[in-house]
Length: 421
Image (cartoon, rainbow, N blue to C red; front, side, top):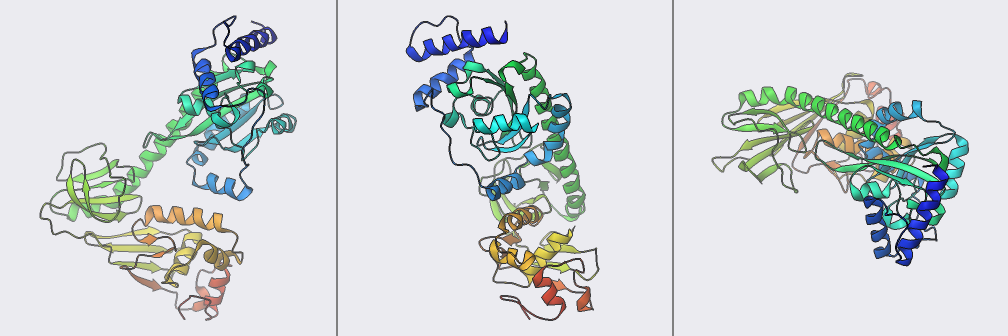
C-alpha cells in the first residue's frame, strides 16, 4: 500500500479505537496491546508530554556504566553505512528508555529535536506513547511503528523500528536500538534489518564474555591446583571458569547479596568466597571452619609503567596489572585510609571536585577486579585489609605520567588533606 494511503487508513483505525467504534481495519496485535496500555495509564492521544531531560553529566554517567557502550561499534557498522543519513536517525536507548546515543544528518537531527527525540530524553512508552523505543522495551521484542500507529498524534509524521538488546551473560534487558525517520522513509524490511544488527551486537557481548571467562580461568587455575577439596571460579554472574573436585556446571546461581566471606550458595551449600580479578573463588566449606578474608594487598608503584596490585588471601595470591588512571586512584586510596568521596578524589585527580562522573566510572571498573577489597561510601580499602604501598626509591619517579595535584604534591614530599605524610 502507498505510504500516505496507509497513513490515512491508520488514522481512521486509531480514531475508531479511541472512540470505541468499529475500526475500518484491525490494528496489528502489538499495536493494539500498546494502545490499551496507553488508555489504561492515561497518556493523552493529542498532547505531546515530555519528562525531564537528563543533564549532560547524568547522560555521561549512564553511558560509562552501560554495557551498550561496548557494542556501539557493531551497531554503527551494521546500520550507518546503509542508512540514508539525510532521512534516518539511529538512536540507542537504555532499559529506562533514555536516549544515550544518536546519529544522523544535521537536518534530520533538527527535525528529531522538535519531536523531543534528543540525547537525554525519556522515550518510555508511558511517557510519550507507542513508539519504537518504549514499546520494544515493554514487548521485549522488535517493533515497527508506522505513522498513526503512534498513540500520540504529534508523532504521526514519523516511522520507527526498534529492537531490544539483551545481555547474554544474565539475560538482562540493556536497552533498544532504533532507526527512525519521516513517514516516507518507511520500508517493510527495516525491522528485520535492525533486528539482525541487534543480534550481531548481542553476539559481540557473548564473545567478550567468553574472553573474560578465559582471563578468569588463567588466574584461577593455579589457585585451584593447590587447593584440596571442592572449589570453583565463577564470574560475577555465576558462569563457571574453572573447577576442581566437582562435576563441571556451566553456571551457578548466585544469591542477590553476594560477597566475600561465608555464603550459602544454591547447589553447593555453605561456601567460602574470595575475590578474584573479574570474579570469585568459591570453596565448598565441608568442615564449617573456613574463612575467606583477604588479608593483604600490595600496591607496587616502584617501576614506571609496570604498576600492579597483588591480593593475598587464604587460597593464595593473584596480581592485577594497573592502568595509569587506576594506579593513581589506588595510590590516593592507599594514602587515605579513612576513605575519600567521589568529589574529594576528583579534586585530587583533576583539581576539579565536580568531575565525579569520571571518578565513579573508573572506580566501578577497578572494583570489578578488586571486589571485596575496595568499598564505597566513602571509597576506601576494606578495614580488615592490610595495605602495603611500594614507592619508587626516587620520589620524583612516582607515577611520572600523572598531573594529578595530589600525586604532584607527593613527588615533592608534601601532603594534602587526609593523606599520610
